[in-house]
Length: 214
Ligand SMILES: Nc1ncnc2c1ncn2[C@@H]1O[C@H](COP(=O)(O)OP(=O)(O)OP(=O)(O)O)[C@@H](O)[C@H]1O
Ligand SMILES: O=P(O)(O)OC[C@H]1O[C@H](OP(=O)(O)OP(=O)(O)O)[C@H](O)[C@@H]1O
Image (cartoon, rainbow, N blue to C red; front, side):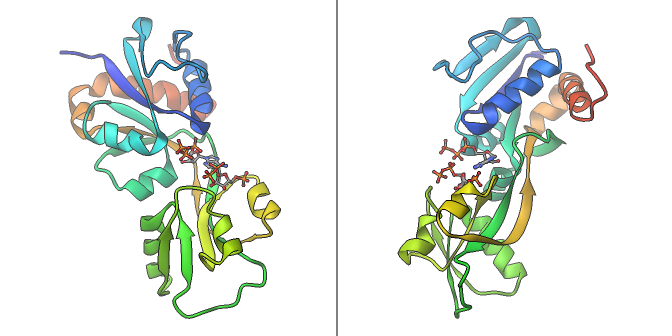
């Protein structure tokens, strides 16, 4: 049986944290698996691993469809995409939070407009709060929405808080904490369980500070 594993890695912010974690776990990775490389499929022959470099939002898609056995993805994307995959491990990298934010002088209005890159999470959260809102989908620069009048509030990622602060907005409520997760394709997890468990265990030992397992 083919025990080679393919891992979908998110380009962008999470990439270097994820790469550091793999290296800390003792994996021997090729130099072309690097932030500044343009190669999108990279083989790691020593470890019998292949890496696919994809947009963060596409990691769960690749894993659900089985083109990757494993993936590394933010919990925010995982919650938003609702893909049929296993969540194996909290890698505890790239921490941030998903929060409700707005202008400091925001007044309650009936059926407020909420701008976000996370329409499913926002709709679900407001429903749980028993609040009716109109969700407006944006793909970035979400903080502009309350400034321009496009929306009353936003649901967005907060890390240092700099973007909110520089745009005169305040964090009103934390919705969820976010870290990156290791996810697995369901069939791969059955068919390649030995290899997946071994890799997952190596990563878990780094996360919990138990030391490298070789
Ligand atoms: N300050 C932050 N802003 C956004 N995402 C963050 C931040 N800190 C950590 N993250 C994590 O990084 C992931 C986003 O990474 P990144 O910003 O590279 O991609 P993206 O903006 O979603 O995608 P792209 O820019 O490729 O369209 C998030 O899903 C989240 O889990
Ligand atoms: O709290 P901070 O440290 O300021 O980080 C949070 C900001 O970073 C992200 O935006 P990104 O840089 O990905 O740009 P975007 O507006 O295109 O999503 C996120 O959407 C916030 O705007």
